[in-house]
Amino acid sequence: MKIEVNGEPRDLGATTVGDALTELNLREARVATALNGAFVSVAARAATPLSPGDRLEILTAMQGG
Amino acid sequence: MRDFYGVALKTPMMLGTARYPSPAAMEAAFRESGASVATVSMRRERGAGQAFWDMVRGLGVHLLPNTAGCHSAREAITTAQMAREYFQTDWIKLEVIGNADTLQPDPFGLTEAAEALCADGFKVFPYTTEDQVLAARLVDAGCRVLMPWGAPIGSGMGLNNIHGLRTLRAAFPDVAMVIDAGLGLPSHAAHAMELGYDAILLNTAVAEAADPPAMARAFAMAAEAGALAAASGPMGTRDMAVPSTPLIGKAWL
Image 1 (cartoon, chains in turn blue, green):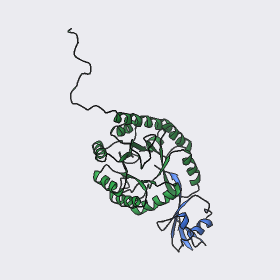
Image 2 (cartoon, rainbow over the protein chains, first blue to last red):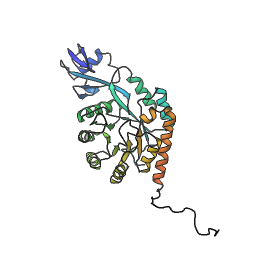
Image 3 (cartoon, rainbow over the protein chains, first blue to last red):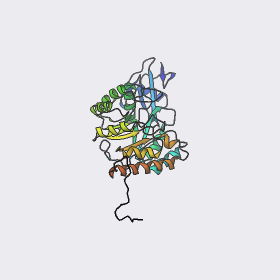
Image 4 (cartoon, chains in turn orange, cyan):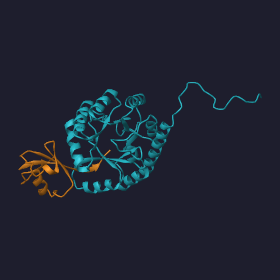
């Protein structure tokens, strides 16, 4: 299905946030996720379904002030 | 020095991790200053996150994730939740920006986010102005630390409203306070500490100096001097001169 990942359009076979991370080769990466603006914890990823048009954000540590 | 949600900091200096000429310069700035807290952020994964995470953990300081760039309470709350999981800390530097030019906080969004995050168990470090009424709302929400700006972020102007900062400090004697943003010179840091603030938080003034580690050390020394002065009972000021050398015993020449 077509969703947005970090602002970029993607066509994924995954149907959950957890599967999307696997498909994007980020399953083992240290990241934090949000779907449509709401936080999705590590524990909730496998049970959080994706729908067409969803906005998935995958964030990591970065420099900050 | 007041504690920060039960944590006593070894030094009154918090340092940002952005805008350094190199990762080595950043590490040296932390080493030279003895800064006890590092601010960090959450951004989209582009492959560099793991290396940065490893590096900041290696600094051996407390991590204070921020919600920089958030313009609504909702964005800031979600970012805080992501940061708590990622950085494994319930400390959050809460920024809800209300104006793109001045980067000044949106007091309404800030209060809304602080209420939600405090209720959710976060230890909130709100980036705020010197507004005393807003400060009272943040304390009511559960904030035990306040971080008023000295001047707009990255401006280097120092303390723009000394009267307001002094009034704020006096109004909440039990709340730890950090001057966050706008410091440009070590003298600004000394002044902030002389006013009775508990710490300073800065980034650009160090990162964009020609020699960031040396400037970091200069700020640390100034902050320490200011803290010592505040604890030493500064003299009052007068309009007229008072001779320091005794007049008694002066020769009749």
